[in-house]
Image 1 (cartoon, helix red, strand yellow):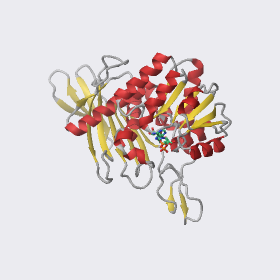
Image 2 (image 1 turned 90 degrees about the vertical axis):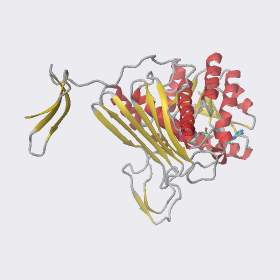
Image 3 (image 1 turned 180 degrees about the horizontal axis):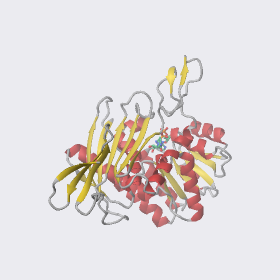
Length: 395
Ligand SMILES: NC(=O)c1ccc[n+]([C@@H]2O[C@H](COP(=O)([O-])OP(=O)(O)OC[C@H]3O[C@@H](n4cnc5c(N)ncnc54)[C@H](O)[C@@H]3O)[C@@H](O)[C@H]2O)c1
């Protein structure tokens, strides 16, 4: 398919590196940028035949079949409006909106125009994530009780991120969107997110938004999705996920210290990996960054879904639900209380099966815990189902 790329900055280049890698078929033919020099450089680097500083021209171009939005957060909605107007399929980077109201309007625009709306949430497509999700769905860790997702780095690279009016917020909107959607996938997208408790602060940077936050999202099943986000973390980009269930646990380290270690006195090239901060001493490069960050699997899902007329794994609806959860996080950080997730449109289940459920040992007892002790004895701790008495049995 022929793609129009809106924006020529950091993520536009990551997307182009992945779209044009390894003999892929979908090609960026047009690039829009308000800065003509950046647009020309991008066009030269990626072989685009059409370059413009008029966004509508790129979208409306008769050869444009799919539009990829790689613009600052405040420009997502106007760009989606143009795609709906010209009935072009659209893939939008994260976060979908600066808040749920914006995201809901975008979702409605694409649905009313009858075009495809794909949410470019790359971290839900990393090789480790996809494998983990399959294991979770196959019951490999039992019922999911708790997810924990962290994205922390020294802060973003462009001025607009640091301006709340353009970005919609700080680390919560920028990084929390990834963490929340990772947790939501593991817990189950049909399970309603009910309420959020969040701490946020501006610890280091002279900005109006938060540069550090930790939050808990409580789901209708009783599962908890924890997010940890920071623009104050030093030492690179920390991307880690954990899922804990009744029958198992998964830990993932997606970026830093994944088994590739290098020492350099600093005499070679400067670039080690995204936000690496250092190019001397012991370094932790990343083998194939676009792959480790999920972009190829993400674009494959998007373009195959367009071709087959189905929804992608990550849709505008998902982007809107994520925004609604983050809105509740902002309200909670201000009120210091649990805040409800407001979802005027909800397409999941109305009720959820509670994750709570006791394991029966026999007709009389529940099993609380079983453990082999250092002396070889197997100890069982049991609870009487009727009287509630707790007893232990050694084998
Ligand atoms: N992992 C990810 O999925 C990921 C990573 C980084 C950024 N992003 C997202 O990508 C988007 C762009 O971020 P970036 O890092 O590429 O930023 P960037 O500053 O490098 O690029 C932003 C682009 O938007 C254009 N732009 C900014 N303001 C504009 C305006 N008022 N009118 C027209 N064009 C305007 C700039 O000229 C530039 O081409 C953001 O929504 C960000 O959240 C996603």
